[in-house]
Image (cartoon, rainbow, N blue to C red; front, side, top):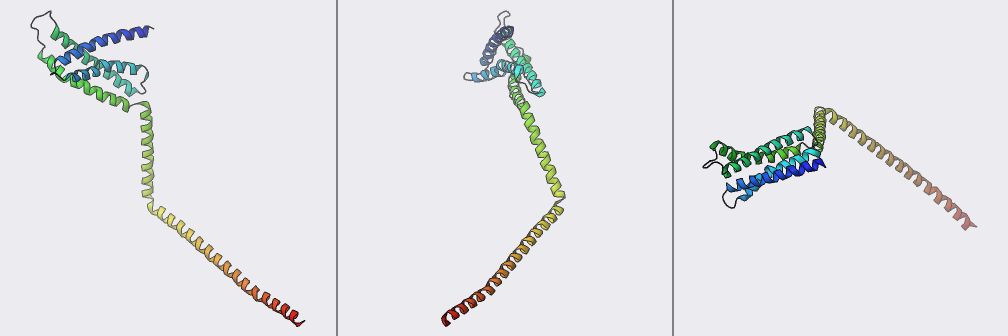
Length: 214
């Protein structure tokens, strides 16, 4: 219960901070470019919420943990800078207080840098997922074994060809010998059949002759 209270409290502050960030950035852009302010809001407040929730239960590797920490720090700095600048510009306590040139320069460069770091950081997070790392290690191992096998085949190519030629020659020789033997057996059986036929005819002739004689 306490954790949910803390979360609601933090999310409320982030919503307020996000509104100030969006308000400040949108005021610095030409009309019709409010989407840039929305993009920066996604890279700061929304990025902080996302990184926090993922860090609780979805981290599967040390690399992911490190990049989440970096993203949270960068998003916090971006949100802090934009919020401070918004307060600086809109404050009424000091008259004619302009935004320092150094701070303006940092914001000009910092806003796109924060967005770029978020894009690269989340891609790095996905790249270092635990299951992805496991599958990548398996693929690398398979590739390494295949390369070793191919190199071994290349080194022993001549011996392998000679062995294969010997096997092919032996198989052909066996087939030829069996074919010749089959033909010889068939020829021998054919000759035996031919020798039996005249005897049968001769016996029949004699029998018929005796029958006629009677």
